[in-house]
Image 1: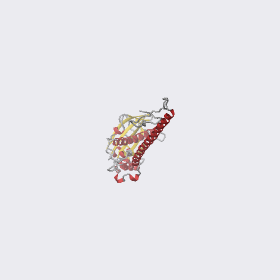
Image 2: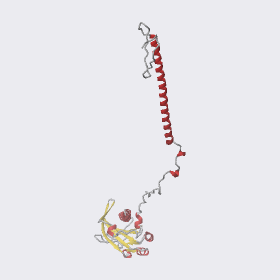
Image 3: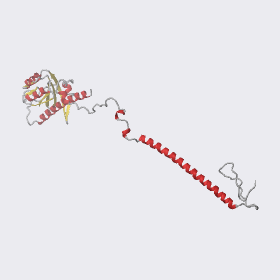
Image 4: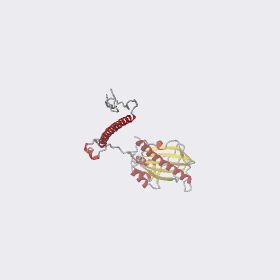
Length: 293
């Protein structure tokens, strides 16, 4: 192989396979031609830069294409997810629950039962009744006063256990029975008589027709001496529900009662109040039992 003054026998390209590298010399002294070598190196560098630029451009185009495809895909998915309501199925196409809407029973508690309703008529007032049920125990305490319980009586002959104008009043209004009990304290005795009717109206009418001469007969016995047998005594009349109740109060020594005898009035009022409470409790007990059924 021979070399000329700078003219290569073949051209070497580092980017082409099997190309021949050029050898540069200055001639006869063997010193390299540095100028020629520099020009060749510059030419190679330019080719590299050009290839890098072209390759980078192609890579940029490829990346941009991939990004564009990804954006289009994302936009397509978003359009499906966020499409306007006009593209949603119509109401008729949307499944709906079948059957009537559930209903619930009202939770309002019923009004409480009125105890007086259970003692206003024999149809509801069905609990057992006797003098010892209505007036239990052997004594009675009202406030600080203690009364000893005496004899009791239960009679279906209303006229036989009453006197004055009361027998006719009870009979005319349908009296069924009269329950009596006597209490005593410090020489003063009180007999309570409870007349039983079928309805409240009958008891109220009997109360309205009673007068000062409508008296229940005093009930002595069981350690209680005779009282109000010909002597002046104090009496009261009232009613509650289907019951009319009467009291007669006097001295066990036969003494007449006057307006100054406050002890007699107080004891008679105590027993009348206790009788009212017992009749009312009777209604409360039956109302409570009915509410629990």
